[in-house]
Length: 191
Length: 201
Image (cartoon, rainbow over all chains, first blue to last red; front, side, top):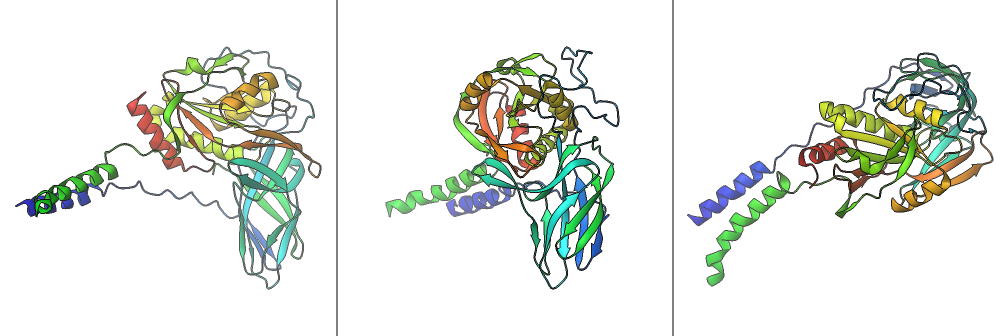
């Protein structure tokens, strides 16, 4: 009798403990607007929305905060409370680079009309403290794919001269050590 | 022989305990929990509209505090976008969540830039900035490290290396847990759902 109670309880426990984990969500894949040359194929190029430099003209109406916080109509057009070096806000471009050639290659430079300067950066996580560092190049080993994604390597846009809004797309010119130049389109979307 | 007499109770008790632990028992938070929770240190800073923000005025709402800066191209936007997505998952309950970004780069992050930046992610987000004197005790209280580092090879001039945690403060103003960078949106959503339902416990 007691054995039966014990067995019943164990079975009940097993049943109860099958409390599901929620379904894992997979992020949507970006539409491809890549290109390829000399074994290098660049796909899934995307950027997050970002704001332009303080004194640049935004492309659309400024989003208004929904909560009433004593909005003052007389917001100064630029400079604000002593913004010094005029460096614009930044953006990042992510992508997947595939090297189907037999020799290793390297992304060494990038350029875009949408920003004053474009650099290559990575992020280092030192026990919760995040540091961003510029890199000379991003290695793409032979026969491998490298994905530039949030938290790691990225093409950094410095001094944006216009806002990047969801749905926008803009050109980025990539320079590979061996593969030469490639022009790709980046789509602005939420991750 | 006496032991056998009581052994069956173990077979009843253990599975019950295990089942409770697996489902419906004490909730397992996904971040780093502060146990016991401490009162979140209060602070007063100016927000993106120039109004005064005081943390203890937020009682009744859950505050998600994040220290970052607008020239941060990757880490900060990732987390802020994740927090916006978390709010969306919470639907109607999202109005009980207040996301607050405190800039660690007040030199470049003017009030105006902060305002444009936070509104990019969600119109409910608040951005705060303060002087070095105002910021120092706050960063100490929350264990935030933020170091300005020159970047001689970059047009950016300098970056700010900073701790990238999201600090979770409940409706009673108690600091409950913190999420590391990259915490899953599902995990954050579930923890917040629990806190919303269970109020200040």
